[in-house]
Length: 192
Picture (spheres, rainbow, N blue to C red):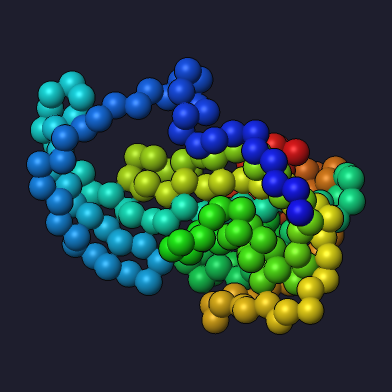
């Protein structure tokens, strides 16, 4: 299996509009502990010297996959999302488990969501989808050389997923027609 890296996280975006600053945490309280994320209320001194209270959603890193079974084709999943009460076309994605590398998470999520294991994993970018209140970093990968596996994939209890392969051009047209409304999917399709 080949793993390639185009970006290396925050260090890659320095100089492109992002600047690393160190805020001083004066106090931190966990105000919510959930299955997928936690919420902390921090009292911080930000780099300009002001003291603020900030609520932060703490979410593990996640991976977003752009599965390309062949050049010019992409596999999307249709998945029911209770928070918006709709089934959405999306790129396969999921959290990076504790102790797992993003590349291993990409391999696992690909197997779980589309039933195939990638021989090639290429890191495309690492982005913060909602940095105003959440520390989640989404790491985007193009995955190819998709092969069946002898191993049974684990499927999360909240997942009801149908996978379908489209011409990349058609997937981009689905965005324009409003059939793809998931932001990570729109970004991922723009990266390939």
